[in-house]
Length: 622
Image 1: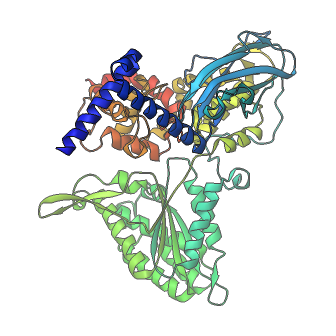
Image 2 (image 1 turned 30 degrees about the horizontal axis):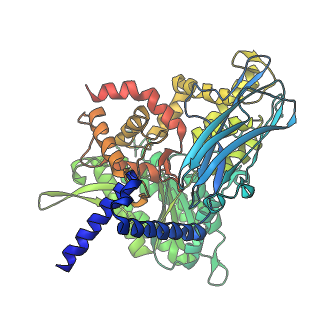
Image 3 (image 1 turned 180 degrees about the vertical axis):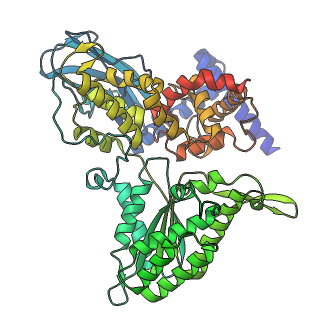
């Protein structure tokens, strides 16, 4: 009875409160309830004020963010004047709303620009986790130094107009008319890694140094065999990490200043695609070639002496008919005689996952070779205390074994430690541009970051294309002027790269790092503008205050199914949620820590998806 009365009272209270809010005159009908509700409103107001006092104040981050639209030129030169649109983005990372927000722009130095729009714009209230954008338009002849700032009111002092708080901001400097500096080398050349041994000191990142140091720390402590792996997309520094680890491991000493590791590095793809002839009449199995390559690499690292001479005779004798056993026995002998561990660094280990067909390993000679190599490496690690360091992409090396006529996927190798390469950060990309032979305007720097996301090889591709464009022709957009890079140049370069047979091959090379389903999801995300302004797509563990998160994900799944109905898209194996997580892991997408929204980190792949959409959507429906 009592519970029912309480429930009835809550219902009546809620109904009366709604009625009172809609029609305050109802207080005359229920004077007691009116007094009670007034008291409740007063208590609620006091509680809100207390919460405001405890909450973090608004924190507005001001950024300059060019549009992903390739045909929106925030910076354009007409032969006389520069026409500039400055795209301003504000994000509130505090716990209270920023009220009555304004952004302003003014001249700070250089030639006096002509302001083609209001110099102050009101953005209204920006809620916690929310964002707002504005654009300012100016014209100038030579150089301009523009200062951008703003102000807002906090709920703590909203009623006190004398206590407006101002947003801290950075200066935006736009510089024009600078000729390129002559340099002796061009490190943008995309045919060699940006992070290579020649440029290690110049471009090494904190993340890469940490991975190398963590592996070396582990090697210092190891007394048993282990698998290590370095994961990452193509051209993100995996090979360089292997080279650095090999170099540093050679310095590790133990047992009376003796070398702890005999190191050897093998490129799996190169070794398994060599002509595999033992003689003109006989072909050597691929796994025998691999073990022969291991012995050859180890031999080169041995000190001069009898052991090295004997092994050299074995290697010169050609591929052995029982390569695995020969390799195993020699590595065991080397470890005991040299009182050292053998460290095998195996590059391009993706060959394990791409070479194994989804059939029983014994079904084809190639699949049998992969199985033999995997089994042999596991035996070396477990029985001979060999350390194996693998570098490969994100596809896990699997094959199908049959248990009681039931196929079951198994992992070839189980790493003890796993490390993932990272892209360059925004600051690191800007440092690279500072060392290039060409100056970039501020908006061009922001655009290059927007499209590359710090993906090293994309920084190289765009940097090399723009270098050739300016240095070779000294002409941009049909207008001759001193060579430097504007945002228009960056945006015009991207479709040209896609259409070019020479430059397009680099993009095709990078596509091999993504599953077919991942590429098709990028098509759907781009064509449907799912990651555009105001789109609420979250992953479950990143849900925030926005309750419509799952609605966006379900709608995306339905659209993906409609866009790609063909049989070559395995929707049962990977859902849209799984694919989003994979693209997040590969750093193509990111989740904004403040708003919780997904967005493109590598904007160039958004542009590529739009470029490829007609072809791939047509093939899906055929």
